[in-house]
Structures are given as structure tokens and as C-alpha cells.
Image (tube, rainbow, N blue to C red; front, side, top):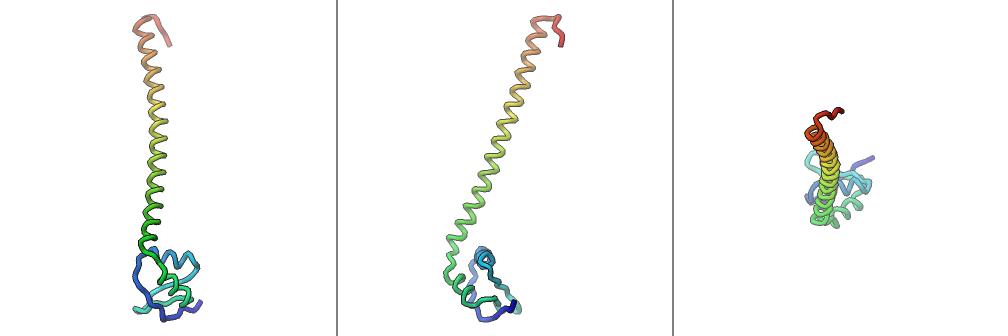
Length: 106
């Protein structure tokens, strides 16, 4: 793959580089010169790239991942609480049986 100079690069964040890569192109900087494998296609991506929209997508993705972690933790917490409640209830039943019936055995 031959990398060509001549791109008019405008810094728009890592999301721009991600989009260029996702579309199958290469953009690198070497000796203070931006090089790419398809000048027209990469320049079009750079020119049409909406930085705000990309940041929004990234944040939405992060929030959804965080939401899933909270949901999982909540479900795990509920399951743990149910288990603790069962153990507590079983312990209370045994305590009641022992205190109300001194001859109680296992």
C-alpha cells in the first residue's frame, strides 16, 4: 500500500481517525506530513466529518455500557439480597424453634 501526501488535515479528534479506519482507509502522520492511501476518499471523510455527532455517539455508547453494568450489578444485588433474606428467614425459624421448643434438634 502506497501512502500519498497532499491531504488537508483538520484535527477533529480520535473519532475522525476511527471513522477513517472503519471505512478501510489509512491516515498517518510522518515527518509532519499527513499521508493516506486514497486522497479523495479520505479528504471527503475529513471534510464531512461532524465532530459533535461523533462525540455524541461515543458518549451514548459509553452511557449504554455503564447502564448495562448498573443493571447487571442491580440484578446481582437483588439476587444476593434474596439469598441473604432466605438465610435470615431460615435462621429466624431455627431460632424460634430452639427458643420455643428446648428439646429441638436439627
